[in-house]
Image (tube, rainbow, N blue to C red; front, side, top):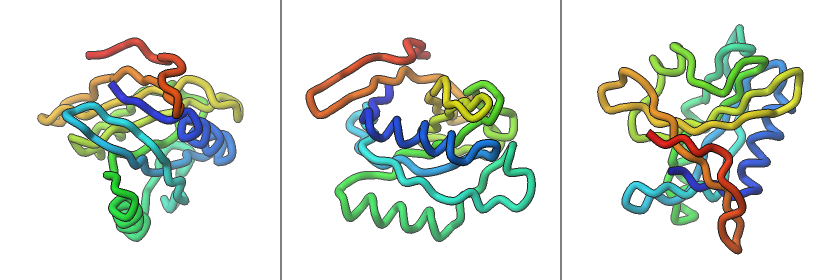
Length: 153
């Protein structure tokens, strides 16, 4: 299960809409306590991919290092990455599977004709064969607001 602050999820959705028709990307910061991940903040970053940004994204090494530093300064961890799928479902592609790393959480937002839609969360198996979908719980300071994805494997 992945918990994400409501405002952080909205920031991911907004970033996807702003970047459309290209893929947006960013990093997620929070805490991992005994396998329970809580995403408290997201860091939108530019998609530095050269060419075909409608179907691919790339986060610069400098942005990755800055995210690690920001997380450490805030007492958090870099928990994973998010990106959008313009005019495609919020499910990992073969390319996503080939370029992901186990342990990190991957959030995908589908953006259809500029409108953000379904958001899903995934973790890559240790053997790197495929992703497993995780339930997403949206939280606020007062607690859980709603569960937007009930699938847990």
